[in-house]
Image 1 (spheres, one colour):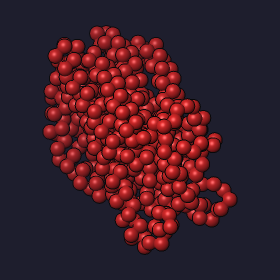
Image 2 (spheres, one colour):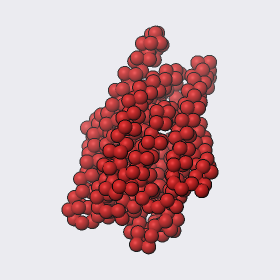
Image 3 (tube, helix red, strand yellow):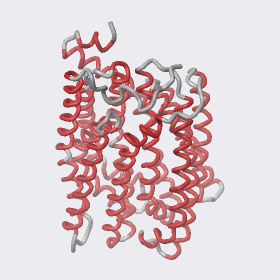
Image 4 (cartoon, helix red, strand yellow):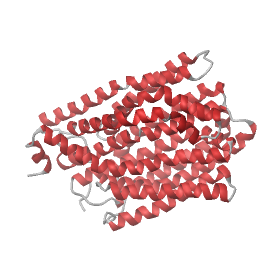
Length: 464
């Protein structure tokens, strides 16, 4: 009897408990890795803050553009993880050819993005409000970061391949190595060598090269690098899953870019405080992202194995776990908002702005966590278009209503209130995601002729 068939014969309570345990086993090491990955920007902001106001302001100007690089990264990360999970469900043990194919497309895309941003860097500096002295520094910083971000393809793809096969622990170890190297490199090069903010691109490149080499060693030792070559199905999954996920992040980039422009009249300290607060927010939303991704891996493995598995129960288990986690995290964050502000900035005005954002927006993170868990799972299991549509509605509401509310305001509070309200309204997206997954389950139950999403790749995959 196969695992899906055995589960079908069990009581619903037993099945839900089994799903929670499987999600927890995957999510625990993934959370550790993501905690380090999210902590790195926070530590970087703190280090740059102690280098001086100019360094943290340049990084704050770069902050909206970082979403573009992250959008590219997450597209290929999710694509590689999705294909690997489906192949694992079918009993196929090889990631070399898939990972190499994804890497080739990523490097081409990354080079195009880097060249475009490098050419546009002076104009972007003007749009973002850089002063004459900070403009030249920002332009140089953006161009070097465009190159440094290319090196991150190596460790990210090694880790995503391991997660797709269910090896979340070794994947977390790769990210641990990279995070440690980047923080140590920034401190040594920035303070020890006197490079200041110019040390950050170098530290990022050290992260990519060191963790990437380590990741290849881990993959080789697990026996997953047994076949090389081009896999054309990568492009199909990239277009169907990776690109919508990337577009979601680009939409979020547009929102943060708009927020920075809205906050521009209130001065650089408000912008810096907002950027710091949203960096802290990235740490807070990490458990939701991890739980959604862990659920997606299990859902894709089940779909790859049979193509008929009912996966709504997996999503339900992930959402219940998310609610329990955020019932603890959010109150603690809100109570410590002042401490967090002063830990991340020496400047009192920047620290105060960070605390104010958390005070107003923080309570809505409970619903935001549920939204992110649902959409993360949906993006990787055939519902990427629905997730993109939900994100677009959220961004349009946040920017449009925020602009109207903030018109003529003497500070950023109306915008922050709008962000919190839109986060809370995201409960509608959670309901839509659950309804979509349940509808897919019903279709799989009633249809024997039509193959389930993810049951087979768009082109034949050779067995190992």
